[in-house]
Image (cartoon, rainbow, N blue to C red; front, side):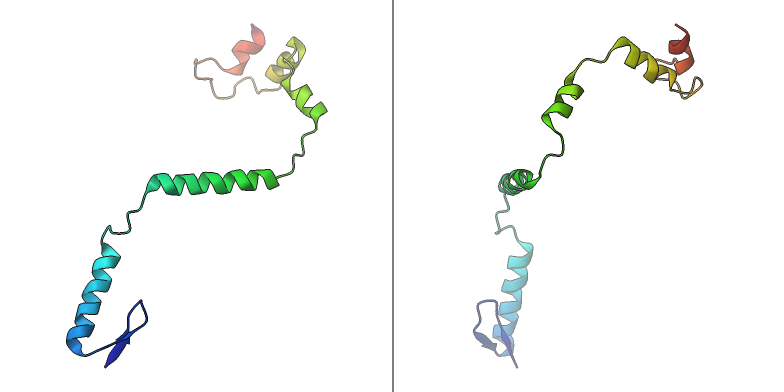
Amino acid sequence: MLILNSHGPEIRGNKEIAKEAIRYFRDLFSSTNHYNPSNALHNIKSTLTEEMHNIKSTLTEEMNSALLQASTENEIKQALLSIGATRVPEPDGFNAAFYQHY
């Protein structure tokens, strides 16, 4: 009986095969790999940075400028009035009806 180890050479004989099996599983389940989460995070960040450069912006300068403008009082009023008056209360406990009235 023979097997091939991860390095390629044939291993023959029960004792040698048993030694190879022990070595294989010891390496597989040990921390000799020295996994470094910091390196993995760096690799992910580098990959994402590269991919971000491949994304074409669909937002024009004009659109971006409009989005950066402060909201007008009229825009805020229209948005508030478009909310159903009895919708779920905000974290402060008041629903939209309170704000629409006051």
